[in-house]
Length: 193
Image 1 (tube, rainbow, N blue to C red):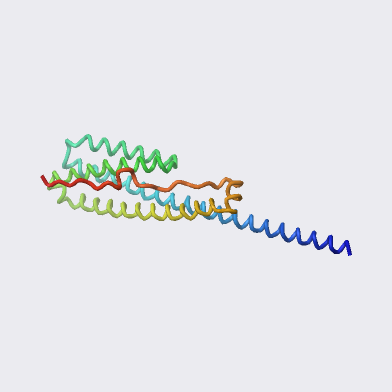
Image 2: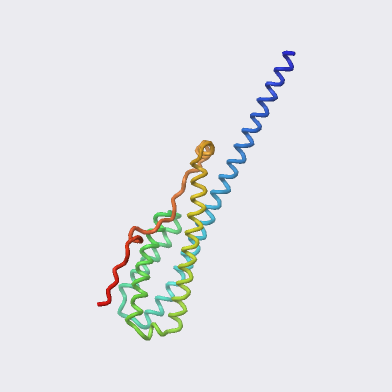
C-alpha cells in the first residue's frame, strides 16, 4: 500500500512538473513571437522612413532648379537626412524620432519655398514628387500605428503576472513607443496679414 501511494505522489509531481514546464515553454515561445512582431513592425517604420529619405534628393534637386538662393534649407535637409540615416542604423527609437522630427521641419521649410516660386508649383515633376512624398508620409503614419499596437500588446504581456516572471528570467523587457514630437499637440498659429 505504501509503495502505491508513493508512486501516486511521484506521478502527480511528474504531471505537475510537465504542466509547469509546458506552460513555461508555451509562454516563452509566445513572448519570442510577440517580440519578433515588434521588431518586424519597427523594420516597416524604418523602411518607410528610408523611402521618404530617398525621395527627398529628387525633390531638393527640383526645387534647386527654381530656387538657387535657398541654400540654407538645402543644407538643413542634407544634415537632417544624414542624422536620420545614422539613427536608423543605430536602431535607437528615440534618436530616430528626433531625427525624423528635424527632417520633417526642414522638409516643411522646403515645401514652403514653393509658395514663392509659381513656376516651381506648376512643375509636373515637383507636383509628382509632392504627391509621392504625401503618400509616403501616410505610409509612415500607418507603420508607426502598427508598431505602437504591437508594442502595446507585447509590453502588456511582458508586464502581466505570472508571465512577467518568465519574461524577466529570459530578458524580455518593455520596449518604447514611437511618440509624437513635443510640439505636435500645439495648434499652429495662422496669420493672413
